[in-house]
Length: 40
Image 1: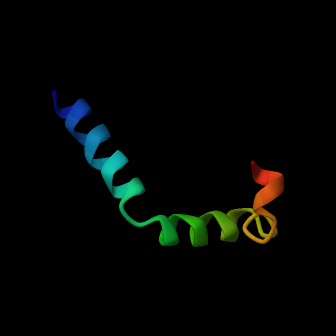
Image 2 (image 1 turned 120 degrees about the vertical axis):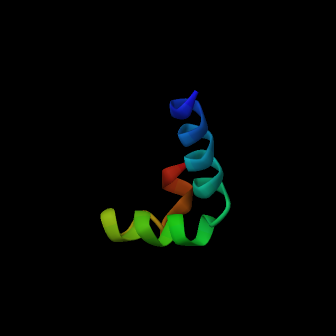
């Protein structure tokens, strides 16, 4: 049960701040945030 709860909280935390997630993704792969049409 703890694993499921942790997974759910992690999901919510990832969905809640999309800006932070995008910034983090840009840091990992610079250039992807500037070209969203290619990511899709």
